[in-house]
Image (cartoon, rainbow, N blue to C red; front, side, top):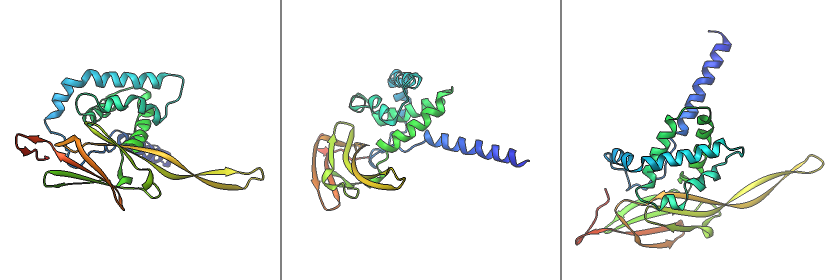
Length: 230
């Protein structure tokens, strides 16, 4: 095999690896909310038209003359999407799978765009979320990223937790003489995390502490017993 052939083979393998990673990006689920292994087939029947509508909406944006950014996907996966019927995180997983099955020149372009959106909105590792059960409660702890503690703000609905916060970033500038200097600024971040399974979305309290913020949920009750998270 020539050096050129070896280079081309390596490039193709690397491209395939990067593209497959775009459609296996992590979706931030609380530890208690592992999906039901039998839910996929039922979800497919119930939400297929919704998934296809989302795909069509994204494809229209991709085919427009304007270039898309990850923020454009915020308009697709908006508060209405996350507060609608069914499990929005399961819908996202199916959407991700369906897009991965699509053919055409826009597939690779969308893969990169979607991966960036998942990283910006659903990858909450910088908040170091921790979930545990304590009696009839489920406790979630979030660590405030450096410099963002005072800006942490939570918004909770029936299926998701949205954490808004500001993080310090830097921008480089060039002077007329060619030298460079850096300025700092704060930019807003938002992370979306699934609600733990088996909790009452209306029955919670928020506590700020030295580490960041804590949410204490009450478990939902069936009869006289709190529902155990599975």
